[in-house]
Image (cartoon, rainbow, N blue to C red; front, side):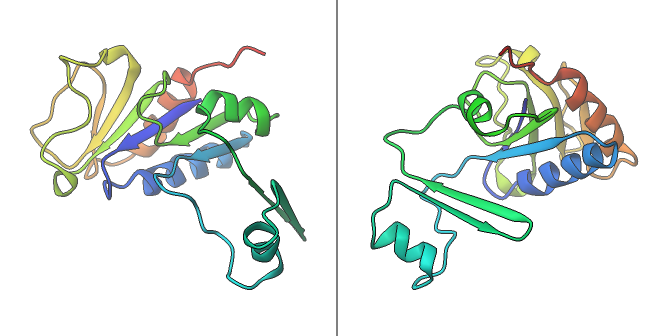
Length: 172
């Protein structure tokens, strides 16, 4: 498992999708977890599964369709990404996590100047060993870990290699 973190609108999803596609291209079984800051509303009002969930107050709603499956599940509290992966993502060779910046996972941070003047990583607060890399548009940013510029070429392949090499291994 490895987490892609960054401030709002920094490009976390774009980077996760690119890394996931690169690892999937290499034939790895890639699975992902997305941390949201508010309850997800993925269903359409008035549709059957929406009614099961909102009107029927079902604890779980599982929707099966050709080629896909979606589970809605009510929870008393948020789980950490490691517990979620163990419960739902059996068989993954690598799990890419978007968010969960406080989780004890290796991190790749996306830092864009437009999203905030400073990255989340702060050498006074964080251990640089937890940060695998930074992808940034700040030409002046330097760190003890690899820093990639969006303008660089071929950084995605190197970043996918780092993600694979540094991902936290889950013990059974």
